Length: 298
Ligand SMILES: [Zn+2]
Image 1 (tube, rainbow, N blue to C red):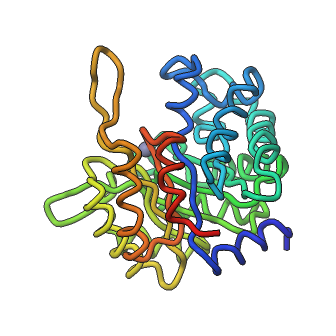
Image 2: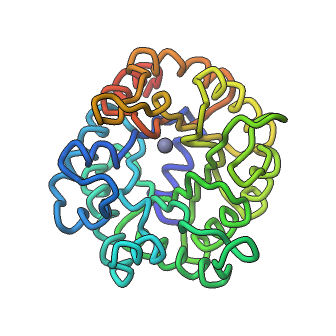
């Protein structure tokens, strides 16, 4: 086994790990235009991407997530750079690995392919699987210690991404979904329950499962969600990365309401509910992670 994938597995068995926070919003503060291709900055503006990783590393993050959320050929093609999958993902993994050194681990980030699978959409499962596999292979080539499949809504797509990462040679795989409240409880946008969503990625072989992001989910709701995830995870460690509140427009800028101290105050409850990896999603900053890190003894 890759020694760093192995040490990550061991560390997680020993203690809860601190993830990191949002990347996209941090890059936007450094000048990335909203809607622009953030992954291109792994090559065009590597100093800015390094700065984001370094801020989370300094905040105490055990896990650095690569700037490759939209790094599949499908999403890159939407920016006219569909042929640069290997280049942008290798570069993204290298940047995070450079900062992580021996004290942190690198999660090679894979987000949804951006469409819907057949028969609801025109995504051909075999083609989407190959796209995820190519992305995962490039992330591993660049030095990712594990693969993180995140913000998933479709359990079929999530399972496909986990299997593709394994086929690419990933030895440690995280898989998390985005949930939202529905009349009958929490559901993914595609209508999967927590139990259905977890069962799909557990069956596909994910090593860590859980939730990130989400719509209209308070931190209290995330604590209840965590307990549901743990109950459905079949013994897999559970990762949760909530948003720092819901986005709201203020003077034409998107702002998030939950401040670092408030966000950090939720950590004991999330740990008590059984979370083993806790980080932040949209709106979370290095200040949020620094405040959270006091709850993570090393
Ligand atoms: Zn998010």
